[in-house]
Length: 309
Image (tube, rainbow, N blue to C red; front, side, top):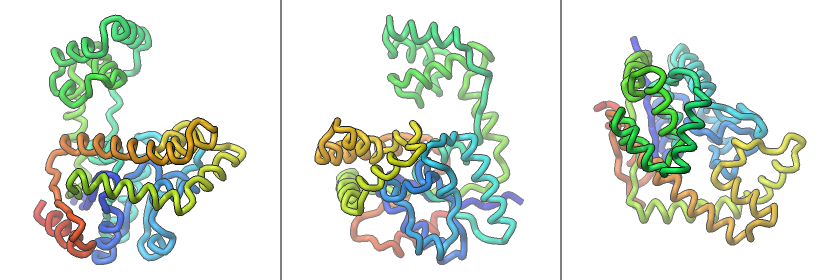
């Protein structure tokens, strides 16, 4: 029998962590984090990690497992998440997967599609053409051979356009078709996926408030301490929203006020990116949330959607 995996996703600052914690309490379950930055130790404030008290009450997995100087890719995440899910299920506990890193969500649901190896000469040719003709021209070429992939990939995302064309060039099969074949093999879980959704202006207001709370809680000092560590912060961790901007501030490139405003803007861009990703998840159910809703009432609705899925 497939392991039931209750998934709660959503944009940054949507409230999914608090709702997930409430559901885990009710169900006696454990939480698997779907977050590419909560994996890093000592990066606490800027990633909005659950409190130590919450983690003592409800076991959380895939948090604080990597040093800030290290990298951690999608394949590593899926392998670690699969191990955690199997362990939780083997102990008879419900599994809740909660987070907002949509590429990790996709990897958990669909697996990691490797495809044919990279072709440096082909990539160099594509990049040279993009420089001469524009990325939109290369995207239009992809649309001719793989319209489904082109519909998912932004016309300016040369890296993903390049990879999709490379797969077609080397295999003769559209990457969208190969990915569907791969997804069909991910049958070990019974996925129940629900997303929290808030009105756009409300979401922006919550993001702004959250950024101010993080700064007041000591985000600048947290980043300063990380930079002072012997190994420092690796390029992957340093690109996290909230950290990249404060690093720029500490290097004298931005005032604190400018860094805070940039965090707000980049967080809103992240939320837009998350919303775009969510439109492509099959069988995703939404729970619309307003500021008048309590954590308990939202948890009630999520639980009903999980049961109905």
